[in-house]
Image 1: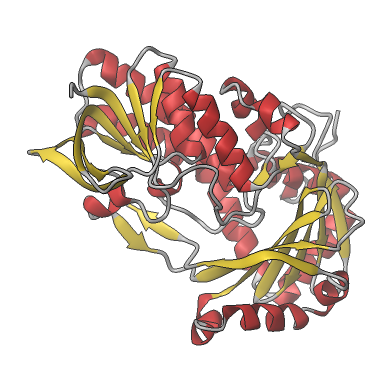
Image 2 (image 1 turned 30 degrees about the horizontal axis):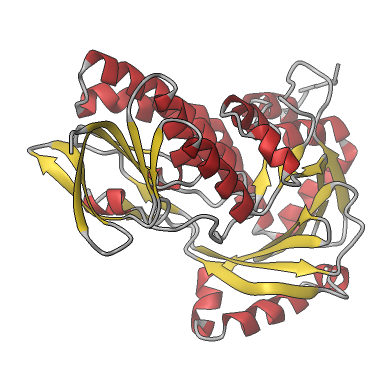
Length: 405
């Protein structure tokens, strides 16, 4: 078989977005995934308002809407002392998103939509293909070894290999790039029924050292996510469901909200959430989405990060393919652009994680936001991925001001 221009390993949002954006520029693309779609995927199932812009660019937004994407116009946050703050995504002011609301949709449904969109284009989509190793020539990656659905060994060649295969990335692992992160947390996620009254808002319950998120993803169906210290869950490795329900009962304000809850399907667990990935030192290879590293977000905005990083990658990859120069130095601008793009948001997320891990500080932050609703609007815009984090920092400083409109 002749070599392709690009092989993308992983058909989640980052991989499909990269494949679509590159095939639209005229490059031949093969998209591999070990799963068959639709398939379940542990996720907070939240699409920030700015995600809609990229889904629209990919030609998938209409299908997401038709599949029942639930609008979320903001969030309700319950502090440890019971203080409730209700934030909405800004609809006026200098920063506007593609839409005035976020979306919630089951990840199984979203990923299937994106894969079908890729399949409608000249992308060579191959499900049930597991990548086992990289093909290398010196310091260059020139393809992948894989097994197809029947277990047959394949060697596929390409000018560029993109690792988009998530937290268990075979591409990053083959290059020895995975690194631990000091933030050690676990997420326990369960779909539930029997909860009502969301008023087009997600709900966050902060009760250090834990926090929980309720995300209405379909009529009558809610994504319940509980984030806990990994060390607290580890002794219950064989009894995580028991641990999950006990931990929920230990959060009194959440427990009262969950009265009448009925589990739908099985609980899923993932941890540690955060990990680091070094930038590839080899040529002919790039990493995107969770394969490039993951920091435990407060509101589950990982899908936007995946989609946006695919946009950044496509720009650099297209230029490198066009020049015929795919060494590590030629691909480095993507690493730099990705770091610059998400630097401010990552700093804010670290600050939020620091605050919500400390009861008194979390309560004080909630009281401060109640007194300054314009600051809460800005925070919602940053979490929605369309207000620059620097604007929030400026407004929060003594004497800082922000007035919508």
